[in-house]
Image (cartoon, rainbow, N blue to C red; front, side):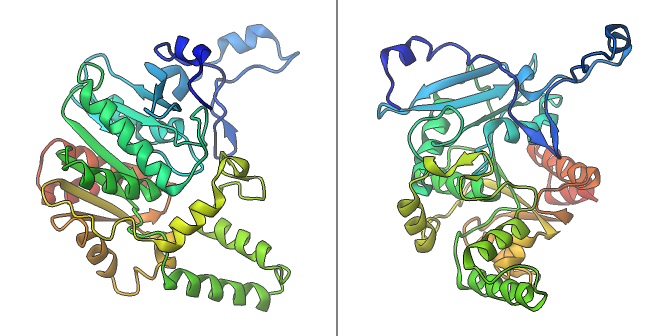
Length: 345
């Protein structure tokens, strides 16, 4: 979608705050609306539902990417900000989901900014891995040149796939962020270990007669095993419609898997949180030796600090999230590695 005259008219205006199309754990992320016939009096006596992420947004806008297309971005802001967290989204997710994940930092005085990759939400242009790198670079440049909207210091957060375009962007822009947190980051998109993992999974399915021998169905079951709770079918991957993906370009980029081959962050302080029960990281065989994953991250970030968590890929339990939040807060507040480990304990 090109930036037409109608689009330009509202580029500087907030995107309308409609009901959030976001569900977490099977429940819609919007205030409870009493069903018809329940009685308005009882509904009014109930404790008010907390505001949704969309209702908490202080800015929600569309940004031209310099090539005639638009990128949707959003942020939450405290009344007095003491810094900004720049957090690219997940593939198949959106910026609202990322902000919801990091929203506790708003009460700690941080802006939290995210966006939608091309192909997601109201961002135009189809999605591809290569395009997600350009999107990340475009929005980071916006945050860097507008300190009045994104107070300093400006730190980064890369979750799962988002770590790849984040690391790539920081390397190619001269490491402009002082600190970066990686959460269950995957340092590569493809390896032979991933194929071996799928083949083992396929044999188990066939041995249990759990699913037919159709390869497409087995691939979908494997993706659902790695990323439980994500809608995956012929028409969509999470919130990303398949028709909005450059499939051939994305497949070629995935198989090449060279995005971080020459990337090194020598000056940026990096804290890497990773989970012991992460099926996705296990598929890459990172946990056959407990130090394999840390070694893979240190090839890119030689000075990285590590905190190993007990949870799964999504940090699903409150305990896991408290561990991660404590370690990240300590790190952003400038304490040393030992203090980060104590906060996560």
